[in-house]
Image 1 (cartoon, one colour):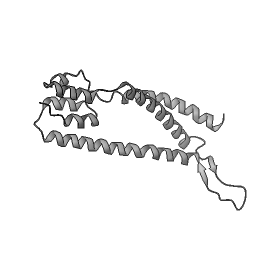
Image 2 (image 1 turned 180 degrees about the vertical axis):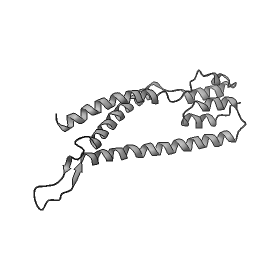
Image 3 (image 1 turned 90 degrees about the vertical axis):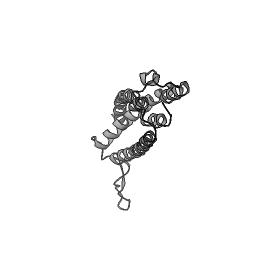
Image 4 (image 1 turned 180 degrees about the horizontal axis):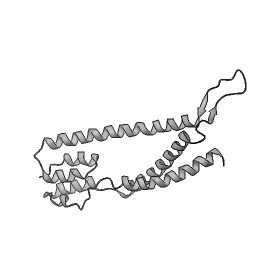
Amino acid sequence: MDLVSLVGVVAVVGGIGGVFNGLHINTRSDLDPTDSAVDEVKDEKKKEAVKKVIKKSGPAVFGSYIFNVVSGALAAAVSWAAYGPYALEYVFGGPQRQPDAPAYGLTLAALATAVVIGLGGPRWLTNERDKALLKQAADESAGTKASPTKRKLMERADPKQQAQIAGIDIG
């Protein structure tokens, strides 16, 4: 079996792992429009605003599953490329048999490392954004009257939902 076929097999198996991650990611928020805390919001306009914040759309969830399958496949292929038996194989360039040719090139492990850095950078930035959203939600909540209903909603929400709920004046 050639190198590309081996990477393909590993990627398919990694995609299967991505399905399970997609299940986990898409159920990350425990907040639901039918949550009892939503019913505690008395003002109908505010209740609708809260429901709008926590509503998840079908296409976005489906897109998240696709993303997780693809990222699982990519992660498995990258791991195998970096640590598998062919990690030190040159994909581009490499030692030449001619005396004047440069001996540098790009190995499979170097390509895999570049992919990991490419994936890790956005993840780091996303975590920084979530941290900023959580700080904003905490600041907005601290500046208002303590609301047990808002606290219940925010406990089960993801960072973006928390920031949005914090901005709603829930009595």
